[in-house]
Amino acid sequence: MYFLMGKEAVWKVISRLAEMPHERSSWDSQTSLRRDLVDFYRMVQLDNPLPEADLPLFCTDEARTKALLNLYSKENGGNFEALKARPMEPRIQNQIESKIIRSLSGWKVLEPDLAKIFDVVVHTLFFQASEGYGGGSLASALGVIWVGENEHWEGKDWQEFLLHELTHQLLFLDAYLEMHFDNWDALVLSDSQVYSAILKRPRPFHLAYHGLFVVYEVLSFRRLLGEPAEPKVHAPSAELLPEALKSAAHLAEVDGQRNLMTKRSRFLLARVTEGLQALQ
Image 1 (cartoon, rainbow, N blue to C red):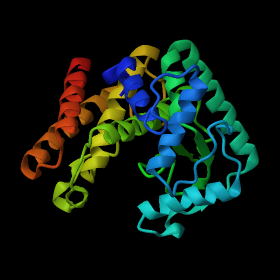
Image 2: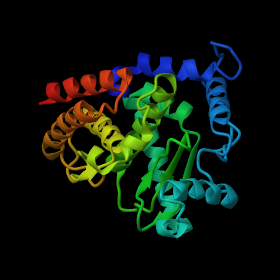
Image 3: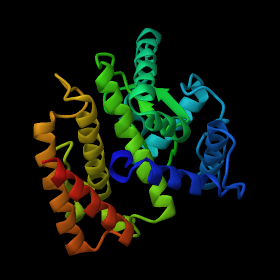
Image 4: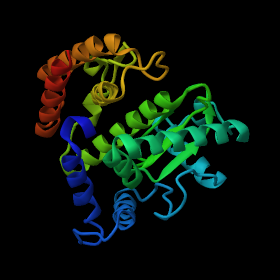
């Protein structure tokens, strides 16, 4: 969303949501904007174990971590055991935290607005090792990112992971302003599944849709920084781009058959498809 729509459009979405809780449309600092956006998160997600806006980014509270994992278990049919989550070793967590801090510092130099947007939108990173999750974001946990035990990732890997999850978060926020899907039951039907550019297999429609934007953002980021020598989070660009174009075509085809998208999500699909074609 950052590279596709541009930083001004992203800031506009963030500001429109942040002004809702207190009906104000200007802020004297980035911190006050972040605080109001967190208040928006509270307003729309009453069950989310949100922090105060000025708490540290890295969550070390066991009770909050468990509550956040419960949200992920609901997305997994309520089966907490299926997550196979376990506390991360302090040594590994400290290593990962250091790599994330360096990655975000790199953004401050390379793309300052990207770093600022991340700081305003994302309020919590929590750490859990899991056999099933390398990390992730949920629409039911705005501003929260699960970080898995990926101790062998290096700088560009972590930057791509953070961009991946930030893209999900920005799509969640955009959908609060203009709905992306209005028939969630139809989205998860087997005949609504769409080819995923990232996993290279059919996935529920909305997950494949999100993945397409992630791919565009990652490819655009690589155009800025250069192709990683041995990417660990996403496939090499030469593989990723054709898979994304295949997914975009399948999304349009299934929507034509099932009428799953709204005017806004169709507009965004057209934009990202054009963007991917321009990258060829």
